[in-house]
Picture 1: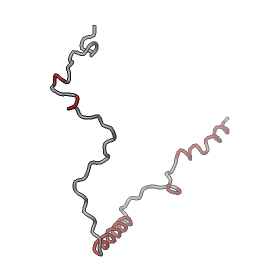
Picture 2: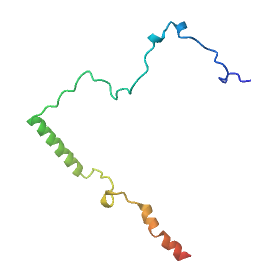
Picture 3: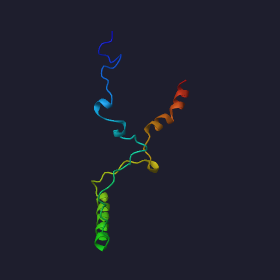
Picture 4: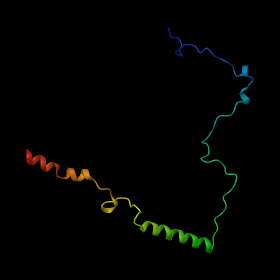
Length: 103
């Protein structure tokens, strides 16, 4: 006997009319994908263009370049041609020779 397992006929049934709703008052089904982003109420302010802004941009780029040249800047490790060093490749390079030599 299945008690409390959710089997059998549902104990709670109702009509839409019993709730006071009709088919016309129900929302329509969605016919397409929702927009990726919501509509924006306010448009962004355009960037200022001028001699002062160009100077500040050049100054910022110069500071970033100087910071990368300082000794405390940690550079990411890179191997030949910008590839990672593959230690397993070095291990397996001589693998078949060692098997044939010992046999």
